Amino acid sequence: SEPIGFFFEGSALYLKSYTEGLPVVVSGTAVPSGGSLVRSNLSIDSVDMDSRFGFRVQGGYTIPQVDWTVSAEWLRYNGNGSLFKAAPRFDPLLPPPDYTDFLMMPWTGGAILEVNETAGRQRIYLNLYDFLLEKKIPATKHFTVLLGAGGRLAHLNQYLHTSYTGSH
Image (tube, rainbow, N blue to C red; front, top):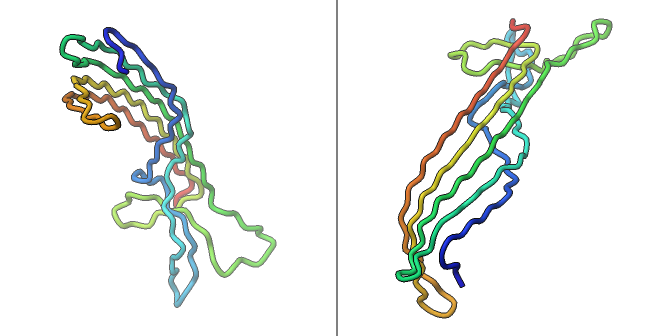
């Protein structure tokens, strides 16, 4: 049975955000061919976000006479992530290989700018606020219809900082 009157509940959340849409570096292999380099095995690397704890709290009131519930919910999550990649360095005393692994900056307008190292750090701060008005109508013993309306406010700050060294 549903609570009548005031109620409060909370949940601990263990979340991980994915950020494939924010590339930090492109890596791959370049093989000499006919006086130029053929780039292959390309991969786009993004910041790997950590799994972190967040929380959700909800409070509200169920009106006994009409069995409507008015509630508000707050969800909070702060995430951090990082990426570090370095281009391989070859031993100068050995013959050079017939290929070279490389790192390349994204977002260069088509220019190929190779780098020796890249580091990226990302932070996400998320707050969601939901306001709900709902009524549960039992249709059968095992089936309930939920009528509801509400609104959501969201506050999202996302920071991405990258640094590149040794471009050539």
